Length: 323
Image 1 (tube, rainbow, N blue to C red):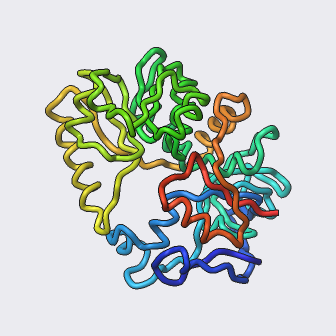
Image 2: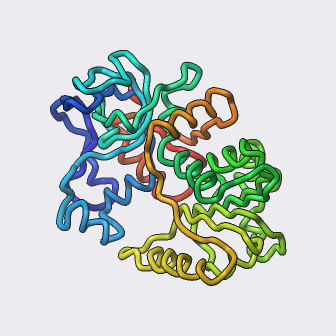
Image 3: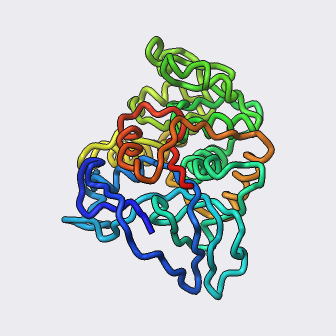
């Protein structure tokens, strides 16, 4: 089968599409015939081995696991003998290792049934980005109807889901994005849109109950200035350097500061699980959440897809489609 692999760290050129053996599921795994996958910052961080602290976990000089891709949607090809939830032929979506391939293995616990009225491309675009938005707003933010919620980075992968999920909870949503994305962000549910090329939301004088920050381009002090006295800042993204010192320092400062002020600040790292994937499936099936897909690439174009996402201008999600 064909798969995208990388055997050394570096730019997208290190990613190659090669023939590899078709994976065989273990007793506790599901084998998926991949129909679509999507690209996340997660992928290019692994590809580049950056920030460098990541290499302590995935390989100091070269990657231990050469597979790429985490978001997946497809059809169950085979199941291990301990699998109870799925059977061959089921259409599923979720997370795995090595989604940029014709076949991939996944744990039963990180998959859910794909709704019939949701395409494979839509389903594949959701897992990491939408789980980050859902768990951030629901579990960290405890979002409630009528609350004022600001999404910084509203046009990106996490941001487009966060706007819609916050809206589904009944929140009054403000999205922050560039000029070219203002109408799109408004169309997916933002009541107000701040064009960051013309206005700095931290200097607007408006206050918010929850800020989900998918960019990390403002100091904590500036974000606190526009949070309500008991407001919550959810850090779902950061401008990582080579060593990740900046984001780590920001996270530690936020945690320490939260102990001495009324505001609650902290990061969110999405956890893939069947229960939340099922909730996302229902939100998509009922039309409360519609994935925003910017560009589609074939499996042979994975390097170009990663390169485009890495540039930082993608609107919503970048999807890999397999025949």
